[in-house]
Length: 114
Length: 109
Image (cartoon, rainbow over the protein chains, first blue to last red):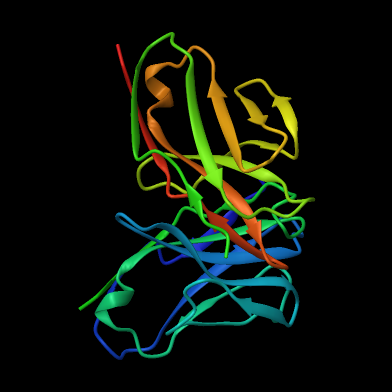
């Protein structure tokens, strides 16, 4: 089944404790991205990647890192999480960039930073 | 910087047609406009995509006027299961993507 998977689905952590949210897709998609969703602010792009070893900042990259060492995986790293990073996070993938292709979203990761 | 604006919410009844508009003040000539549907605690799901004029698929139509400063998602004969949040999505710059502010649609019996 074609899908985007994220882990964990739920995470409660404390300020400053490094964490990684994994994202994997099995559709051989070139483009992957991370979004955060907050009440009243909608979905905002954090980082995106056009291909292996090619990543760039979205609208809200501060406090986040990503890597794209393999085409199928695009982990989101929070080196020192803070409470303002409490949010619902979505990973997505698509064949190409610039919105030409349908984006497939993962199920979401609900992160709480205390 | 692309800025997309949508109505915050809309109410409808089963069987009615619903039109949701997204205003975008800065869209490049070749950019596609895409619409997504989102249910609570789920990732957005693709509905329809278009470049100009009108596009129709089995669930919706998308109307894009000649000036391309807006687009309208049309849902024919909505049902209770269409209650969701609807987002337009546009490219920005080279590879960024920007979601609209989202429209919460409530369909009542």
